[in-house]
Length: 175
Image (tube, rainbow, N blue to C red; front, side, top):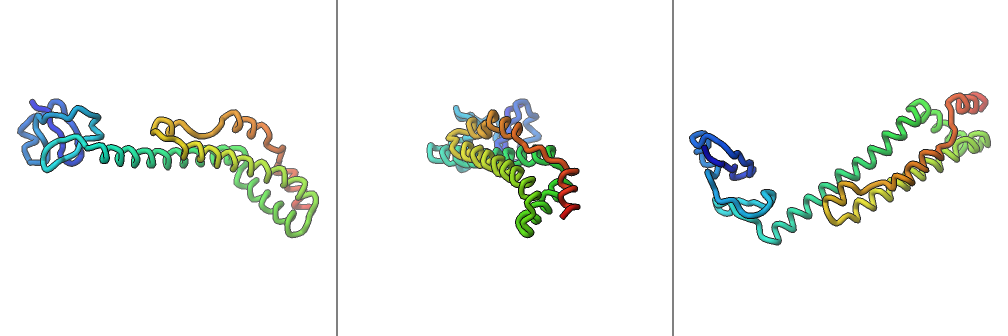
């Protein structure tokens, strides 16, 4: 039995049947560099440690990937919350109310829809702030946990206007 490491993926198998890995794609019982395996490289057929510039580049790429992933998660969190708070049918009613308020100057529609618009804008502001927090992260661990100020998010949730499809429907039907 041998320790084998793939020469391109750096997959390590600690207890492998040596005969199964003699195809040239694996190092057999190599001397492992004294570093995190993510910093390993194939240096002309030899398992080696990346130099400082290569490590910095690797870390930079991982940080960027983590930031992009976390920003998408933050956006999905807000979208999911809004979807749970307001159904698609209600969202359509609110779009019609917005049209009535802006195009026809319907005061009832304005009075009803503007607090909801402000609430959505505040949610968008929280999301932009969360994304800025993520972007400011200088390490993967910080990027993975950065995001919303959850106290502010909770307060935003608590200030959601009291909107109902019945009230929206009454305004729409009276238009």
